[in-house]
Length: 314
Image 1 (cartoon, one colour):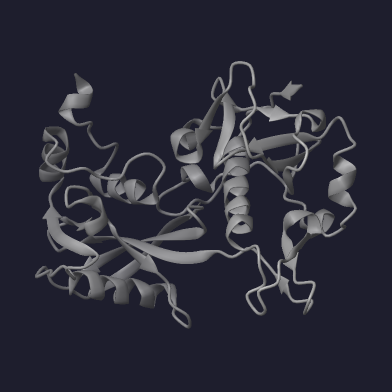
Image 2 (cartoon, helix red, strand yellow; image 1 turned 90 degrees about the vertical axis):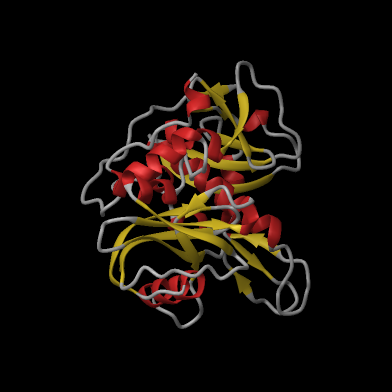
C-alpha cells in the first residue's frame, strides 16, 4: 500500500537575501503538542490513514519526483518510529528500516540527490527525517552515566532510566560567508579534504558564548588571515549531515592579502565573475552545487546559475 501526497508548496513570504533555499522548505505541521503524549505514536500505527516515510541508511523511496509514503501494514517489525507531523489531514511517521524493501517503480535516493526537485512538503519531510534519524543513531546512551536511553515523546526525547535526565535532538550552528573585496571579487578557498581543486565559501562552527557575527569574523581571520566588516545575514537552511544548521552571511573584506591557514584551507583565491565562469567551464576548479547554501551564496554574487563544466555540456 503506497500513497502519493499533494505537491503544493507552503505559502511563502519575506525571504532574506538568498530567498527560499532547497532544504529550508516545509509543508508539514510538526505537532509538538501532539507528540508529547506517549500514546500518540502507537495509536497512529493502528490507523490505516497514517502515512509512513521509510528511511534506510539515509535514503528514502522516490517515484516520479515525489516521496513514496507507505501505510502501517508495510512497515517491517522492529522499525524505529518517529512522529514527523501532519499534512493535508494525514499524520506522517518516520520508520527507520534496516533494509530497503522493494517498492514498485521507486528508487531509494539520498537527500542531496533529489531535494532541489522535491515539493516543499517532501523536502521538509526528508530533511526532518534524516536529521532526527541521525540524532538517534549517534545518541543512544546517556552522556552523564553511559546508560542506554529510552525513547519517549513520539521519538523526540531520550530519557536515561538511571538518572531520569532528558536528552533532546541537537543542532550545531555553523556560519558560512561569501566575502567580497572593494572590486567586488569573491573569495573562495580550497579545503584540504577536497584535494585542492574544489573551491567554496568559508565556513565554520559557532563556538559557545559566541554570536553569529563574531563567528564570521573569527572564522575568516583563522582561515584567511583577514578581517571583514559589513556582515549581513543572507539566509539559513538545515544541513543534517549529521546535524548542522548553516547560517549564511555576506561580508566585505578590509584587505586582500589573504593567507590560508595551511591545515583546513590550503589555497585561497579572489575571483572576478569572468574568471570563475571560465575556470568552471574549463574544469580547472570545482565549486559546490546542488542544494548547498554555499552554491546559493556563490550564485547570488555571480548573478545567476553557474555554468556547467565543458565536459558535462558535451
